[in-house]
Amino acid sequence: MRVLEETERYEVENFFVGDETLELILRERLDGPFLKYALRELHSFGEACANDIERRAVHTDREGEPRLIRYNKFGEEVSEVWVNEGYRQTVQETYDTGIVGYVHKEIPELGHKGNYTYSFAQGFLLSHAEPGFYCPVTLTMATAYLLDHFADDEVKQLFLPRVCATGEMPLFEGATFLTERQGGSDVGANVVRAVKEGEQYRLYGEKYFASNAGMAGVVMVLARMEGTPERSKGLTLFAVPWRKKNGELNGVRIRRLKDKLGVRAVPSGEVEFDGAIAYVVGDPTKGLAYMLEALNLSRICNAVASLGIMRRALLESKSYASRRNAFGQRLTGYPMVRDTLGKMSAKLHAETITVFDFIKLYEKVTDGEADEREQVLNRLFIALIKKETAEQAIHFSHEAIEMHGGNGYIEDFVTPRLLRDAQVLTVWEGTANILALELIRLVTKFKAHDLFVDEMKNRLSALEECGLTQVLDREIDSVQEGLTAFASYDYSLQTFEAKRWMKRMSDVYESVVSLEWAAKYGRKYEKLAEVFMEDTWGLRKSGEPMKTVECFEELI
Image (cartoon, rainbow, N blue to C red; front, side, top):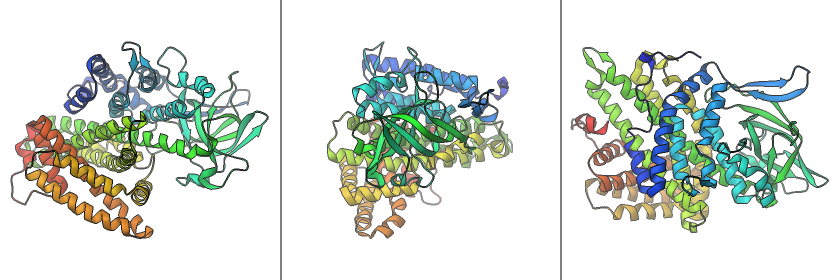
């Protein structure tokens, strides 16, 4: 691996230091010793992400991709995945921080569990450097969630301690295998079979897009028992160990690894089950319902990864523009550059505080403390913001390349990798079309549009009235009128209109949270809210002063 020269090194040596928004979120959500612990540990992890983990990510992306070893020297099928030693180091160091484990078990120093806010803060920092590896972390989080919430004591004890390991025992990474060739997003078309042989179930069939293949110690798989109904009602959730207790493969075979555009760190493959021993998780009739709960967790992780890429793109853009001279002055001296960086800063801030806003609600849901209204809003917010953040990660990566000019297209810089890695985030855990179908279901079944409008109006009314609140109040009225009409459309027309309304709804949600932060913290956050609102709702008229230029130092 080539060691970066000092002149090439990224100038920010800690991704946590300087992120005032994240620190304020933590100070709002964590108390006393937990806050002190989190600030210390995130400082340490932010430094690792900006240095060692970043260097390893470059090596993995450029030279050290996972490779499939199908056979050993004796011609025996082993289906092993080779990963480079730097990647293995990142795996061990990251899980040892408790990014997964401390959601489900006590932090020894504190004597109580962590929470998702802290875990997602860790994931946000990791995704600055290695969003590809945050995919296996996400899958392991989903695996731990499914085992902890739905498995019986026997199955839970078999797997959960190792999935949540933080160095005290060998780790089992996790994975969730849903996709089959004939189904894709249509999980109800799945045909992998679960056959009862004696007292044990065994799986037969193929999963076509299986991420973390060969690295996971236990895999959560949807399969169809004999004699069960067709479509999604006949799917059962199983926990499948990758190897038997004697170390032999558990009836699994990796046919090939996918050659992906980006996120090359994570091995994604085609996996065949040929009599794999499998353990039923929870109620056999609720497999898809369980997996959809894990999917919502994964969608939040997807949004967090998007935020990490967005902030890295902004930091790279700011760093490059601050030291690059063109036509006799630094790039940051030009209004158009200041405008781009200012708008990126405002959008990143709005999306970060909005993601962590619904994470607070998500924690309430997972703790079993949410009522039906809050559960519906939780699903709605996740769908809206997963879509918006994923699209913005691509946009921010594009802007970073533009800021670098020709250098932005060269693999010596991080910007091409950011764009390649960002592109998958619109696909993972549901494309925009799939998320649009979620909106339609929530509107049709639960009147989610009415719940959304009421929530936004109530939160806006709690703020002191000003010009921006009046603007947003009018926009909410407009959205309410449009969503009421949307709810009355036939299904075909709803599918055509849904994505447009998702964008409007996410804009409203982010605007409300931005104005709440402006009211709470003032100064810089008032400016960020003004820029965000102006850009989002087209408030600036031609010829008026540019807030992004006038307030550049404060914004950036």
